[in-house]
Amino acid sequence: MKRLVVESPAKVNLSLEVLGRRADGYHSLRGIMVPVTLEDVVTFTPGGRGFVFHAGQGTPRGEGNLAHRAATLLMERTGVRHALDLRVLKRIPVAAGLGGGSSDAAAVLAGLNRMWDLGLSGADLESLGLELGSDVPFFLRGGICVAEGRGEELERLSVPVVPEFVLVHPPIRVSAGWAFDHIPEEHPRATGATNMLRVALATGRPELLGPHLVNDLQPGVEAEHPIVREIRERLLSAGALGAVMSGSGPTVLGVSADAESANRVAAEMEDSRWRVYRASVASSQVEETTSP
Image 1 (tube, rainbow, N blue to C red):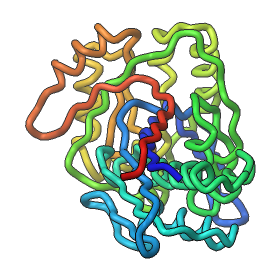
Image 2: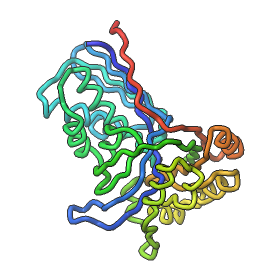
Image 3: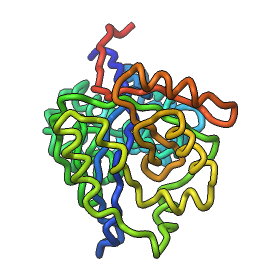
Image 4: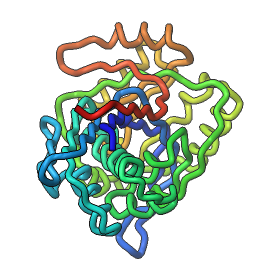
């Protein structure tokens, strides 16, 4: 076995429509998710005396960490267990609406499947991933996807021209559970937004994305954390085609048609009160290196 290094990307939500609560307690969702080039790094090193896990800075340890849970779940279900040093280098902010924990879990499932030659199919991995979190199947599938159900019903889109992004992250944390519990009752649902975004992507016209960006979790988070609204308004003033909170927040994404425009927006957004990231659409990158 060789040492394996996997870059696990963040995601942004161009739309997140909450359609109601299901009988199983989860919410029915519809939206478009995009993997972006803000990435954690997961390193698998074979050998040693057992399973050793090193969490990234600021993340939960042990079973509280999705990457750790992904490894133990795979070992339990397959009965395969080799000595392994598993390390997660965190670059994606934690509890930021960017799916970093889910992406790390997906990287672990896919990485160990490859490293240990387990022979699990994509559908097998996605089924395991759903036990860990609703976003994990998306990261296993890859690409820009329309997501429905809990988020596990995925359709990968073919997009001829991809947008560029500016991500702005204020120093606060918002849990997904809190965000879903604070959707205003009177908040109007933006029915059809995801379909309009899908058309804009399919026709290669990122300039049409802005008016249809939507997140039904955004009003509740903005009411509790006004800085999220301020960032969104600043992005629009800086020239973004549109701006919306990603996932459960608090990160806000601004959409630009090209890299030059996005660079200008990013420069305008520099502020000591938050962090600014430039990001493009990502594809998974896996690198094998010889074990020492």
